[in-house]
Length: 223
Image (cartoon, rainbow, N blue to C red; front, top):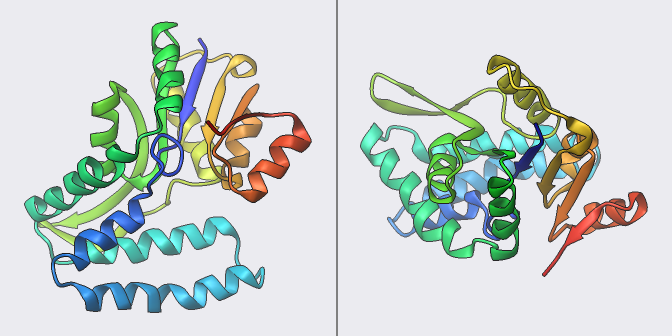
């Protein structure tokens, strides 16, 4: 079977989950939480710029910082946030050209998966909208009906996407022909996923991914 693996942030949707969560929080007078988020991330950002931590390590820090906006919320409050971010922030920015490719894979009977570092409840809403049954995403922690403000590691990015994808497919005894499979993403952080498939597709790529895609003759979708 051929697999087609899609990222969400910047790929299926132009917008990204993080700014959506911040927008939701600040619209509800959570400005201090917004300041705390940027304050917590600033040292990590500097470390990343200086090359002291990897992009994947930084992404994990971002996920942990974003999950703090959920701290103390009950399950319903969290569900309201997740639905708003998916339905009112991400989906209005869906990329029709990428969605067309997803639909083509579905028509061909390929295994279509969404594999994203975004939070699972948000990705669930996106997957439902696009008719995708198979998805992997970052889990957020809840205890006794309330969110703790932490993720359940690991954050799904970089090499973790490969590990989780292979684990998922193996658990379902699916035989995938990787040399004929596809991966769609906007960032070079997903290079391990690109390297796993025969058809990497750079979607509205950032500067680093665009340069690598041109160098390695990967397909680029920009319009």
